[in-house]
Length: 51
Image 1 (tube, rainbow, N blue to C red):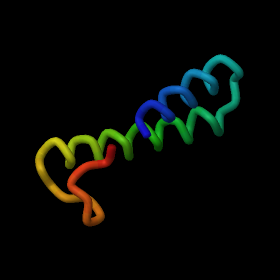
Image 2 (image 1 turned 90 degrees about the vertical axis):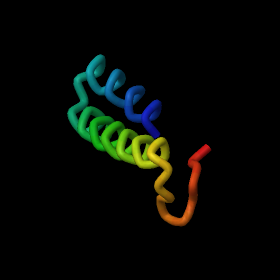
Image 3 (image 1 turned 60 degrees about the horizontal axis):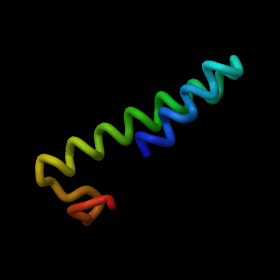
Image 4 (image 1 turned 45 degrees about the vertical axis):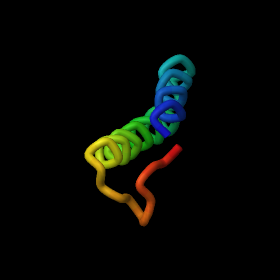
């Protein structure tokens, strides 16, 4: 999810499309939160890992 967000951020920045930039920021934030919860050992939505 973080990788998809970064890709959308880059595409949005290069093409100047603001909606891609916004979606990229949201995906990076959600991915970072899930990654942090996973590394701390918390189960997220009933799963211990997301890979």
